[in-house]
Amino acid sequence: MTSADDVRETVKKYYGGRLESSCDLQTSAASCSLSCSPLPSSVTDALRLVHPEVTKRFFGCGLPFPAKLEGCRVVDLGSGSGRDCYAFSKLVGPSGHVTGVDMTEELVTASRQYIEYHQKKFDYKEPNVTFVQGYMEKLGEAGIQSDSMDVVLSNCVICLCPDERAVLQQAYNVLKEGGELYFSDMYASKVVPQHMKHDAVLWGEGMGGSLFWQDLIALAHSIGFSTPHLVSASHIVIYNNELKAKTGDISYASGTYRLFKLPKRPVVSKATVTYKGTVGDFPDQLDFDSSHCFKKDVAVEVNGEMAAILQSSRFFPDFEIEMSDKPESNSESTPQYCHLNPFLLADRLGSSVKQCSKTSKEKV
Image (tube, rainbow, N blue to C red; front, side, top):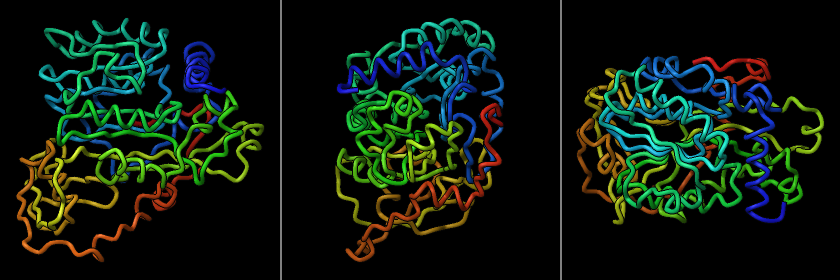
């Protein structure tokens, strides 16, 4: 594979024709995902309502379902069979809208077949889901306007794209100020060597194009996003011995991160924040990520960037925020990113190869 077009054609063939279901994948990517807390009932209920044929052709590696989606305008990058889109359709409600973008014509055509089914299933007067064929790195050409989306979601497809920087840049462009990129993807324990990127099966499985997890942080900052916040992680198991030999000493993990498009002003002040208990499904505490758990009516101090996220995002009404007059010192602002390592979080959560099997069904 020597060009972006070659990569795209490989992925189209791999997912559009070669794979009939997630059980055909050669890793546990579609069945392993451990969150720090149980999924809320609204998400599990929404997933159960998705048509079985749509779920069968799901190839994701995580459960990218952030809280407080009602009324949001959402775009799903690499929507595939439409499983997540239809679940999001239920979660955003009739006043929200979901757009699924995928480059594979077979998957877009298949996903469109179930629009009316889910509209009736959710008892909506009009459908609130649209599927378009297009490229994640060219969202403008797919009809997605700049500064138009509240949330950009993606489930294990950015690692299949030949230009990950372009994908994150496009996500940034289409988000409103305060908007969020919330996505699951595959990550490597070290930089993937060039020769692995030319292997069609390794690329189709997500292993050839996986980012070294630390590179995501630098990439996000260079585009203008906040520091990524790690939500959940699991180790990925390679079933195929031939592929295992090709990957050598590189390990893989699925990780779910959330990144925010912050206002273009410097973040300088810490804050004391108190969660009001007003986010649906989270009356007692809001698990924002693997490092931040906000309990109702308990004041906690957060750094300047987290304060800016809470102030500018859809979560602003759910917090009392008292800014500090004391600016963060340079020493306090020195980044320490070990808490963003998906491999360490997977270890902490007890992700085990015994929990993943090629034929296992995702438990939700």
